[in-house]
Image (tube, rainbow, N blue to C red):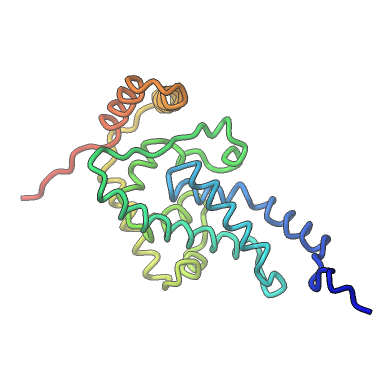
Amino acid sequence: MVDSGGDPHPVDTNDLEEAAAVFTSVRPRLFGIAYRMLSSAAEAEDLVQEVWLRWQTCDRDAVIDPAAFLATTTTRLAINALQSARVRRETYLGPWLPEPVDPGADLNLAAERSEALKLAALLLLEKLTPSGRAAYVLREAFDYPYAEIADILQSTEPAVRQLVSRARRDIASERRTPAGAAAHRRLLTTFIAAARSGDMTAVEQAAAMTVRQRVRPRRRSC
């Protein structure tokens, strides 16, 4: 006699534990990709959680390279989120600034390269297209091979090389003379403290300081 109240598809606990172990091992990198793409720690956390849910329900036996699969899923979801975010920001009249986090205080970021976590870098990344940002982040922050980036973006290697080259050129054209590490740290600390305290005057002052430091005006060609 069959117990009709039982679960016809019992959960394989060992399989889920293995899936969780795999996901946990690459989670810092997934968060790093999502944060650099979205410039928001909260949105990055939500996106990584969505990746985890998809990882639980996908056919993991068919996945040859879990790390590559998870990075691809994260990147494509981030591109989708960026495209939606750009539409929202087009209707917002005020200045938009990324949400900075302190990489020294966040274990998800501590293992990743810090250069692309600077507030100025996040502001410059905002100028890129979603695909351009993805290509640049994967190449510059995580040293992905061009061929692998092409697979993730469902593009060709020459096209990806062009995206990265254009992104490098656009970012280089916007950079000011680099400030010292101490100056970057002070700016980041000031902005985070102001945002956490809810002191709107301090937030506005930090934002104004950020905008002043973030870009050099482009020279018009004759």
